[in-house]
Length: 420
Ligand code: UD1
Image 1: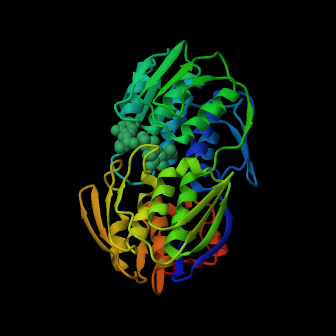
Image 2 (image 1 turned 135 degrees about the horizontal axis):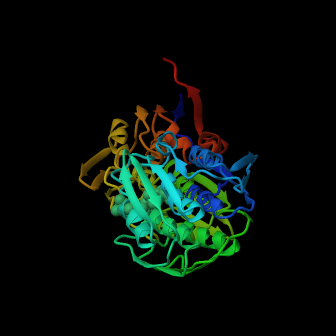
Image 3 (image 1 turned 120 degrees about the vertical axis):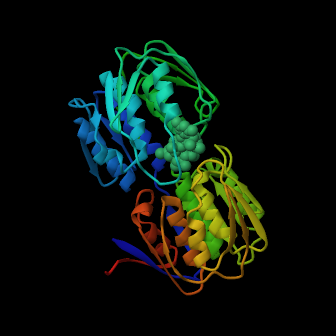
């Protein structure tokens, strides 16, 4: 068990490269068992969520090897259709395996998934959609049992544009008999990446990035070598780090169009941002106006995965900010921790009212989820004095060498073992 020790007050200067998107890689890993041929993923981020998905693939009987950042997956020998609780409790994205495991084996048995503790995170849409594709589902003893002779295409309307449910339906429908249409589909860039990946494997998916996705089932899919899209949430986290600390930071391997809602907010508060090709350059001076209103919503709205980080920034801006979290009901766990650092925050239900203060002060804080942990780290970088952030396992789920990258930009941050 490690913790971050942070000495705040240093501006950030320099350049870093952004990793491939966690939320793109996870469904691609699920997709890899749809073929018996070899799948190669380049620039695969070595984060714990990816490690857990690789363990699940091994449990199913796939051969996997991660050499530096290239992941090789051979699933010709995959024979098992069961994912036990020991593996699913670590990662909610294990639920994405349902669609592809059923498509491959005609059956799947999976323990209820875990992952970030950010609310109820139901899976009703995943299950009802699979039922519409002809899957018989029974739930017993913490396990979901799925069975079907042949997946049959269907017209599916999602009550809300769930990212995971959209991906699960696509993963099942690519090998179904006939056509599937998803209405009110999620539009996130990671879904477009999944479509591109599957189509290169020989699938017929159209419309990802819009609210209607259609999938024409095919008989089989072939192997592929692929580089996933850059991580818009990691990029956003480093842009907010530059905004909160001041300085000048360049990011490479980013797609500005994927984080336009954040770039708009950062420009609004006074940061200068230039984008060109796969680069973003941010200049931030020390006096910033508050972002006023942040309302999380599905893409292309402001992402819930960058809500905690901009909340930390709002704590040290001039003026007040209202943060409305519309997606996950318990995604404010970082707020009491920020209060320990001197932030002026009032939370009422899904709304947080933040009045900017001149300076945060160092404190001992605990990360309780992935993005909240990143936010506390950023707050520590801006605070006066020493901040310690514990429970780094949450941060390790989604960021490669978070501290090393910040250090490269000049931050005073050390990862040290917790002494008992
Ligand atoms: C994905 C992302 C996560 C991000 C979230 C929202 C991955 C691996 N994770 O999570 O980082 O925070 O999108 O952008 O890509 N819902 C239901 N029933 C369901 C499924 C979802 O009601 O069956 C609701 C959820 O409670 C939530 C909303 O739909 O309010 C969006 O959730 P969803 O898009 O499904 O999030 P995830 O796919 O879990």
